[in-house]
Length: 219
Length: 352
Image (cartoon, rainbow over all chains, first blue to last red; front, side, top):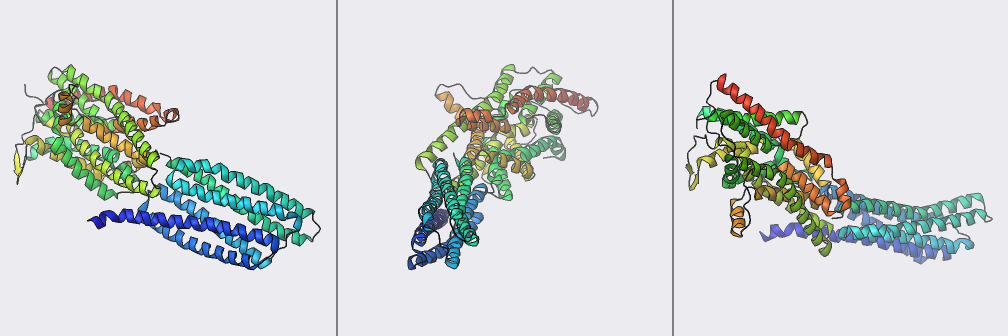
């Protein structure tokens, strides 16, 4: 009898752990990306960047696996249906962030673009802001599970970093297109800058959705 | 139990069926609408606990209704229940606010007028007061429950998964309590008018001895249970709209409604209040739907001015209109129906 009574709570605890693991994967992938990009911009493709790229790939694989398992469990037995939809939508958004992190670093690995020295500082500033937006999104999602009101308060920080990333990105693009280099190189660099900016945009979109889900769950 | 008795009882059973089809949604709608319980399980739980509530605690509200007028002939009881059923059906079709409770009261007053039996105005006043009191009490209970849940959640900050698990169990329990209270309170609407005229005698089922009234209530409870089988569309509508409040708010509403019905059915609670020198609560049938509306307002009030603005005042106004309109229309229909039954079908509608 105790076995039957204890089972749902044990399942809940296991699922909580899996969700935490998934959020850890997104957060750590964001930090790895920041380290990799900062190093790449200054020193080009190195062993450190290669190692971080591998880590990001592993995080993305783990994230995919966890998202699948969490989704199945949520749908079959755990949450109120309305909440399942919201939680899964958040996890999909975060998984998308992981995908973009992986695609961005793979793009660098394949194309090895060279950024002119005059944009290094601003580009790193942009990378840090984008990664901060990702990190703040993860923090907001963590808060949503415990304290939805706090999750709403987190949203303005995500928006702040998204705005910072966008401003820095514009400055980088202006500098690139003013620099003396062939147009195809400029377009290649623009593509990479926009990819970094996309990270912050996606984090901001997830933050907007989260704010609505948090209102629905605020007791 | 003769066939003719069952034929006379059919109008009450029809009333029970329609009550089950509509009001089962108030008790299990949230649990089914949120897919916590499958519909067949909800119907089974609802039927079992409505039956239990009716047989174990149905006497209180039924006696309360009896004070208004003891319909003492089966033909009269049949007509009274039929008039109430026709009014509920007609007004629902016309989209007017209606409650079985108010219809049955109107029908009994109609019987009193037709048979020239003086209506106990004190009893009528007490019953009418409960119509106002039930949504107000529903609002108070829901406000207190939701406020307490909010406080606990804000202090303990449980994980969303844990909170949802607790709410799942809470909604099923609230449904069970609600079904029991619905049976205990609303069985008076369905079978109350047949009690005085019923020929049923006490029967023993093994160690269990049921009085004549309890056998009647068991039949009514079964009719409500059968009605619940047809409640799926209403259940899904009510469930979804209550869940829009948020799951904790939905729980507070269902629980508050169950408490309101319990308060107006429990003889023990009434006696306890009297012991403490408080005025006795009249045990009479009240409308579960109106208690739900009051409870929804109670949850909205916890949210302060913002919540107050979300209340649809037109719904409350319609309920107030129904307090006058439903009994008046039913009394009129009952008076005419009694005239037809007595003079065209030559059935006895009262014993002088």
